[in-house]
Length: 371
Image (cartoon, rainbow, N blue to C red; front, side, top):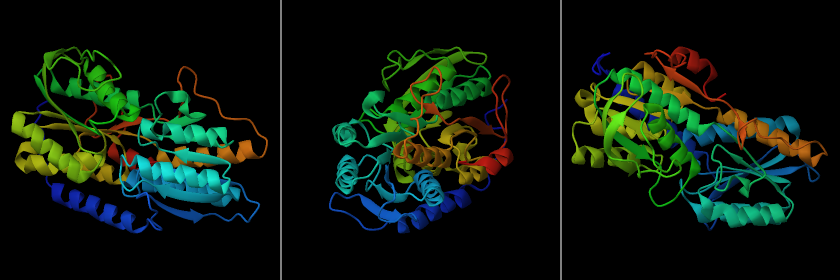
């Protein structure tokens, strides 16, 4: 397969749609607190209702908006008093810590959290010591037993699917790779699992599999037909469109011949697309993780070539259900066999399937996006 197999006609329309979604979701956050985070309450419970907090990384990324909506739906059905809060931005540890303190003080039965790195671990311990059942969503903490259980995508598998697909599509060509990660000043499990999973899927030795950026910068990949590779950069994009644009610009300044771009999530991919420009984008394989409904349009127009779809709505719904069950005397959930967390599933979405890599089309992905 040629890397310039088709034109990318509507990149601007999808990028504008991304900005529109972000602007709309940002308006839904309310009640800022002194830490920089934000919070709101919902649910149909009275004073005796079970109280649960959902604390996401931010209230801007559509992924977390979907998660919040899923939790609201489950809270309404379960008669749970749900308190929704978020950091001011991805990586805002102090904002999440303040929201955990609020949950403890309020007497919540449990917390659902997408942790912004190990900086929240001490506050999570305080919550558990106070008797709250703490479930991590999407992002397993480090170490995993910081929380009672994690409901998440197998992020390693998500990255591997992207890498396997990319190696097949390269068809033996040299891979000149840009890795657009989440952060370079924090160790976050979702970050290194996706990045290192991608390299493992490509058939590249990752050295320390739980650390980004220590693999050999050049060598050979064994996936697909195999070939040479060069890793140009590990740049942090913060999981956001503007960060992805800046990260991609930094990578292109180092090597303008990049033909493979891995992105931590789809907002990062939209920013990378802006930096690449329409002409250069034709010769680049762009892969990502999240699988939001908007990303299905981005696959149809060629901005993203493949993405691993996860299911945040399901994570949140199952999390609310689990805390309600535990609070009313039921059994606690258990991890999926062979994994340190409860696996909520992942599928590769692409309109250009690769031999030996299981995938579904964007049309099929649109029917189940974010679950």
